[in-house]
Image (cartoon, rainbow, N blue to C red; front, side):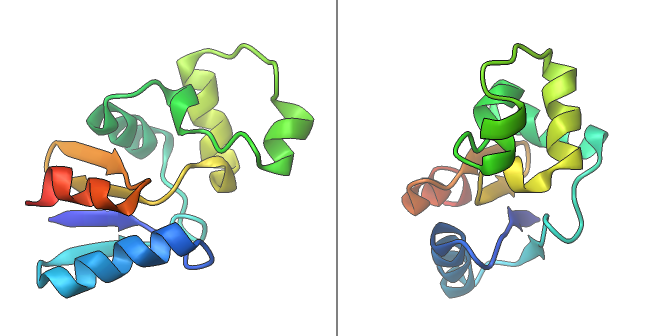
Length: 114
């Protein structure tokens, strides 16, 4: 099952959702700001993305700039920060099986969906 971690206020996320809707494929929308992933879920997402947790951070968000910029945290600490502050999670994330992409640009979806 394909999953999209979606924020409807984000134009890139809306574009990614449109691509999935037009694909005819079954997928699940996860509104991660309303239902943040658990520490375990986020760790699994990051593993499927094949990145370090810090690479998933939205470093322009005010909470990052005010509280975390310049800090050196462990991977587990960054994951905890993102689960407590889901607006720091980059979007949109699309997961298909054991693979995932941050759909920026949105065409990255095609790397794992087709």
